[in-house]
Length: 462
Image (cartoon, rainbow, N blue to C red; front, side):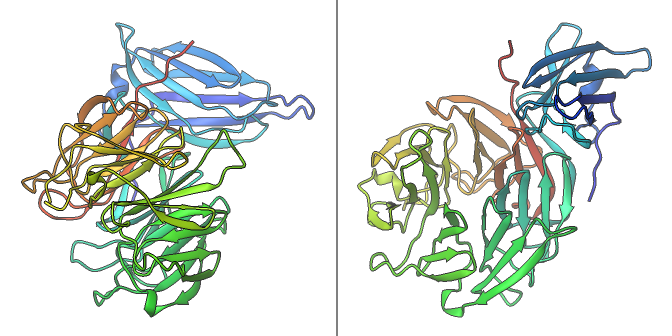
């Protein structure tokens, strides 16, 4: 499973966080540096700057005679969490390498972590790969990474594999296998550490109504509860949106409500089926506001948008190109949702996007957002960018590039090459502001084992 990157160029990157004000204890967070396999990005680095974001602390070092950099951060261990940024500069003082940790507790703890370093604004191979190439993989976000469940292997058979890409170690943690092989499962995750998995296609090619809960907090590989098997609710390729706590809305016929280990048809009189993709937001500036859930796309009401708030599901008035399929729906930091890519009824890939503000019941079409219309692209959003990667074009070609958009304006920020052209992959944001791309089919129609990471440009620094 492991594809370790280049030999460490930072021999001892350490953050000594202590002594704590009241205990006198000292903690050390030791950082290993990893890159894409075979990447020579660190060979171009002459000068390294290590930055702790909070409390803001900077240390720097030149490459030593042994080719290594020796760096150490010492801070008082009584503050809130902060991230460590590693920036590598070449002889012309240009940033040629960048990596960042997820948020770290600035406390008297000991930990061994890894920071993945790559050229800024690039897609590169992750330091690990899947054991088996898969398509139709289910994915869910965790506080520390991404859970990948099931999928279809190169023979077309569903698999039971479960792994978590841990952004603190840039490694794959093997989970206990699914109770049975499945492809195209719906996955929902909660802050409680549970992952909920429903449906998918079994080894006989039939959609199933199995409902399982995975406890990610139990060492060493998690634990599955087999909650129910409900053949009347069987489906594959459905999607879930969180409704708060451990409750989720799931698309399909009929739409399904999951609440903990309880699962039932929603009971909505209209519609009896929900197509499209769901997502949820809650207005951060108004903690008392309800959670707004939108379902956008073909099958989501007569005009392609349904809105769920305070238990009421209502069809919305929306632009004609909201009725799309093979698209993505992502949420933004300002509590909007963006439906992007996919195709309308004529099967022609769309370049437009639908900007949705569910609190204001506002749904606006924005033309020519994408340079290339794409079906089944891998899409993820962070606070600073939206990544739209791969997919298929109007001629059915599998695309090998990714477009970057500003999440506020949808302005086009650039197009970058992928490591592997793929369609039907999943993309999820990591807590260190990178994006992980997994699974899908390559240009030959074969599933992919290689994982890709998008590394954004570093933030503006003081």
